[in-house]
Image: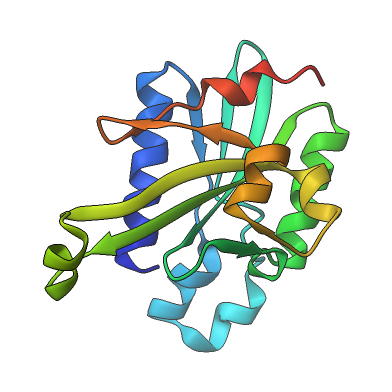
Length: 167
């Protein structure tokens, strides 16, 4: 897990906690096993998705992804077993999303070029599992039409729109 992914994960988990959601952090046993006994990693089940949230009696499965080098998210970034687990959560009456953070930095020489510092782009979209299964890739402009934008403020992600779905 790289620093951007860790940062996004912590931002989501912190946000969920501050919103009063019950956070179900799903450990990645396979990655942990690789550190201590690489030869046994294949014996551990792969992680279903990154975390679950529980709010007002409704479960939500989330797979967290980030994009830092393009304006497009590809379905191929989600593993088949993750898709299957999100479909199962949805079939059981829960919510299921792939939460994608588009984050592009402006550093070094580019700071003067863009007259900015920090992030040039930092947006989060929740792609419902049904939408994910219906295509192969989406630009940010396309996601604005088919996904739910979760706004970032004070380094927290507003996850409340996820619960406003009618299904």
